[in-house]
Image (tube, rainbow, N blue to C red; front, top):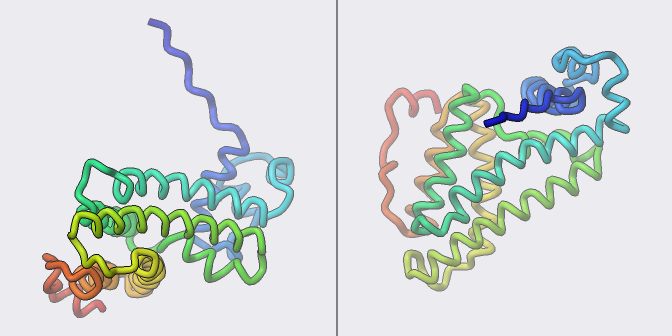
Length: 214
């Protein structure tokens, strides 16, 4: 059986993948084009050959980052093989796991650029708006199924709750980044399920060290 060799990453691929890491570490404003080129180990001038501006690069790293997020949405909130509330737990767990892998340092690129770049870039703002709308729709899909099955009150407005989850989770992730602790995200999950969705949750108490860190 003949195996086709894997295509080598192009300079453009390297700039995007390594540039994303640089932006996560230093922020969009703090990451210079020189930093990105050095991390990607590509020739000087490669950046301008592939991106008309740093702003255009910012939109593309959002797309690269969201490709991973979209896969999580498919595996969790949009996964019809799981009960809807289990999907929501899985979605929140996926976010916590990503934060743990990053040592609670990077937060969420969507929220980071939302706080840092939207005042200076209309194209980044519009792309973020579209991305958050897609996340909300995945949440609405999941919540509507929970309503249909009677897992949550039928009077619940899925659009409003989805908006609350998007904003609340972003805020909790930011606080987790500041505190270097998963507690804000865990607390958000507990409040969401117990007070908003009226569900029991296993997160009834926090580890003493986590509580102290918060």
